[in-house]
Every structure is written in C-alpha cells, then in structure tokens.
Image (cartoon, rainbow, N blue to C red; front, side, top):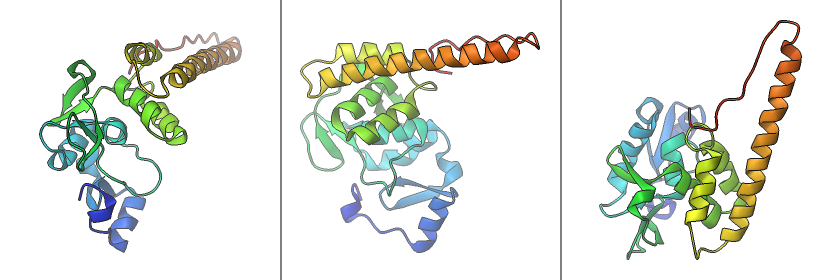
Amino acid sequence: MATWRNSPKLSNTERLLVHDGLYEEVAPGRVVEADLAGAPALRASQLAPYVPRGHVTVTYSACWIYTGWWPRGRMREVFAAHPQRTKPPAVYRHTVPEQFTRRIGGLTVTTPARTAIDLLLLEPWDEAVEGLLQLYGAHVTCAELVAQANMESRRKRLPMVRELLAQFVQYIEWRDALVTDAVRAAGTAGSLTYEPAADRPS
C-alpha cells in the first residue's frame, strides 16, 4: 500500500468523489470522507497507520498534512525518511534532526520550514515551488525559510535553493509594497488605511 504500484486502484466512483472534493485520498488507494481529513491533525491521524514507528513524515506527505495540497494526479506514495531503511515508506534514507520535527496526530512530521526546504532540495522544481507557495503565509514565514536554509549544509542543490529563496523574499516584499500602495491610493478618498500583515503564520 505504501506506493501506487502495490496499492488497490480507486474505483470510478471513488475517483469521481475525490475529484468533486467529497472524498480525500489519504494514502495510495485509500480514501475517506473529506470531513475526516479537513485539518492537519485529522490528516496526520489518517496517514499514521501507514507510517511505521521510527519514520519521519517528509516532503509531499508532510506538506499534505499541513495544507491538504498534493501535486496533480493521484497520490504516488507515502513519503517518509528513516536513518537506515529504504524499504517503503522510507523514500529517503537520512536522519532528520529532532529540532526540525514536530508531533501531529500521532506522527512525527518535519516542521513547515524543513518541509519546504526538503521539497526544494529533493523534488522537481515545479512541484516544489508550488508546495512552497502552499506552505507560505499560514504555516511558515520568509524569515523561517531563510533561517532553515542557512542551517542546512552539505546538501545537493543548496546554493540554488538559497538563491531561489532570496528571489522569493524579494518577490514577497515587492508584492506587499505594491498592494500597500494600491490600497492606500484607493482609500485616500474614503480615508481608508492599510498596513501589510507581519511576516508570520496566521
């Protein structure tokens, strides 16, 4: 069940219900009513039976727990890391420091900042950036992302990820300034004021 290769196929009815948002695929080939996976703790508890003890939920699966987002197409597999094992669901063989994890719904999950950095370091760029955008704002700040990247070392793509984050921060600052100026200009007649929210999870 850990991957789509050995998991049961969704029936036509299940695929339709998932498409319509009434069902949620919580692991490859396993669906539940959407209300049972409507919050991070609920999603983690649904995924917990498929993540053995000693594993850390990472990348796409961690992002899904926080946001409910999954790349287009069916859920490919449960993404977890283990210091020694590579048998599914241990997609990645490495140790995640405890300081970069938290407990949610019975699972050990990478923090939002570590999740975003892992996505950028390990997964295809297009999906990784989409995952970053899903996590940003409600779950992680620019400052936390930059701090996490600076704490990483000796990982492939790290210089590129740091450069991408620098550009991302510049974009966020430009966007916030643009919105602030537009709202101030529009609110002049009505004496409206606007200040951008602090860069922190809501």
